[in-house]
Length: 141
Image (cartoon, rainbow, N blue to C red; front, side):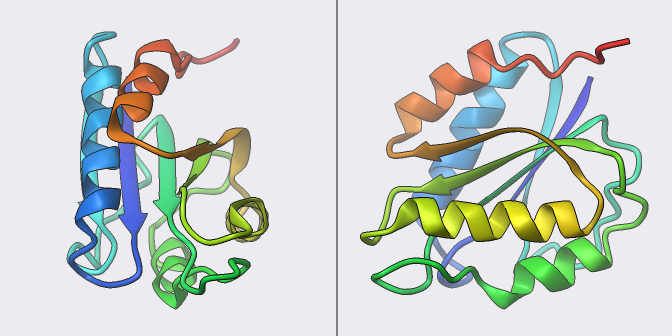
């Protein structure tokens, strides 16, 4: 399966979110899937139409949570045909109200027509690797 992991942190060089995304990809690759990781600030014109499963990650932009970077909405609206794609939303632990940030991210993804299969709050890269190893991205026919 072709899996795409896209992330947008507080700024262009969010290394903690990058390491979580790469460990998630490593866990998926251990299952035999192909996983690509893209930073939404850097890889602005990627089309996600040919991916089977899309994973979107962010962290809260404010201490109290509930806000996501504006680049996520823009990126998803320009990502090609993603309506109906199965996906996962994740937020790295940060701020007081991570669940509120996760809910907003899910709402934005569903607004693009994506089919949300799972959502997670991921605190550390090793937890992301474990999630990638157990994540079922196979098509359910």
